[in-house]
Length: 398
Image (tube, rainbow, N blue to C red; front, top):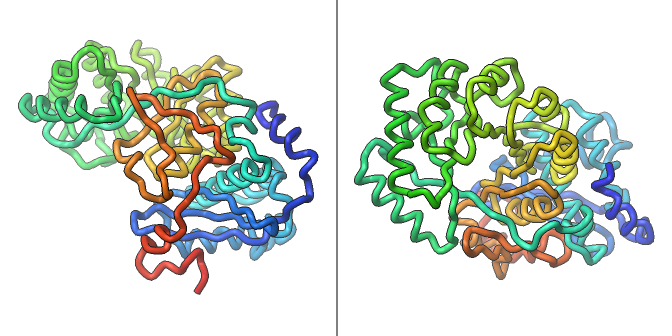
């Protein structure tokens, strides 16, 4: 638990100086649902919890964090906001978890870290022990379309190379190579399918060139023989990662894949808490873990995964395809992890209008690490109010 020693030390003198008064949620018209933790000090912390229904999020907060369920003594309201590890344990260990609960409570945890940083006047990276870097490398996403058409690849590559963010690594989706819907489970790929995959990634390398890294991006849709066959035909393009070829949870088939290929294998966006990551680490089944703060237990839970991975000398990168708060939370957490070479970032990230001034600074494919208190986001409440989901109440108020 050494990753939280700085927070504990910084908070010691301020224990009991603020009390959580309410936890609210609001869904935006873009689908992202935000969480707000209020205190009697007049300071609020913000988080986000994925594309979830506002009423569902508020119901889960009432049950798991505001004491409306059968364990009212575990509620956060009325408690010290700086006791983050206690709150994390009570939210994630005392209740049975499912994916929606995981995302909602991860958003609450993110808001608690934002709040702690604001109360203590420090960035989240500082409270996590300090920043190992001033900026971090990014990878982004390749547009969809016909991946077997050389002309389409010429235009696609030109678009990516002209992107003002200067990204030098992109995910290239296997479902486009196969002309399938994203995350549509494929029972088994035929030899013709495998040839199509080979051609698609050969064209990606040809048109993107040798200076841009390619991630062979799956969505857990392949069976084991297909995953091994894909690894064989894409090896020639030297991908940066082979991402999520198999099911999200650990199984012996991950070891069969590991033994069959020299490709760097990446997984983790759907892993929940450190116990989900542990078997991958114990069996050395992957080369890199890619947890998502919203899916993996918040900043606290994801830092626990990173600390565990450090014992196995396994690097961490962060899955990040959500909103402004997750972007800032990801950069803060990434800065505090020694072996975190890069994180994910969408090409639209600097265009998010949630704050009066978008705090994301991206140039030459790298994101600068903010030193502002908390997550470093000054949300524009007027903009949020005008961009609520249809019939969504203002921060849950009728």
